Image (cartoon, rainbow, N blue to C red; front, top):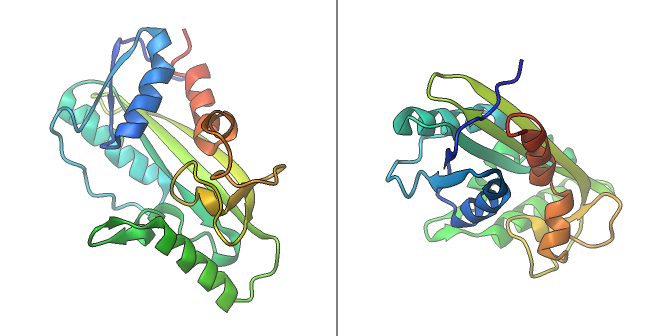
Length: 204
């Protein structure tokens, strides 16, 4: 039996201000207020797992345990078929530099590897998102979302972030980077996972 969230305050296990705004807007109509681990001064735990579910659980349980409140985490990334699913859970790591994250560098690395392998077209990939809702007593619920598509070069579009400028979702002819935020949020991997969360633990 799925556990329902019946509180009015939720900790978001992220230091990403954009995610805090996005999730806050989604749950506000339910009478739920959100606070981030950054606002609470909690550190980011080390993500040591090799799966999205594993790392989402690490973040959510660390936040729930430290705050004494239910916590929601998100772990997401892109998996490229011809690269055996890489970068996957290491998506953000591929963009790390001493001066912050450089996703153009990461996208170039992916495309160069595909070129080296002479990977056939279409070059398939999928964005994956995993949400973990954890309670201080150790219970959790997991919600996942995926959106399949293909990769294109060169990057195009000014919207979105991360690998969005080279990812064309299935059934479309433009990249996530070329899509307006409203359209992307309607079909994205995170939107799929959030729809499951809203219909499950957040159902009123």
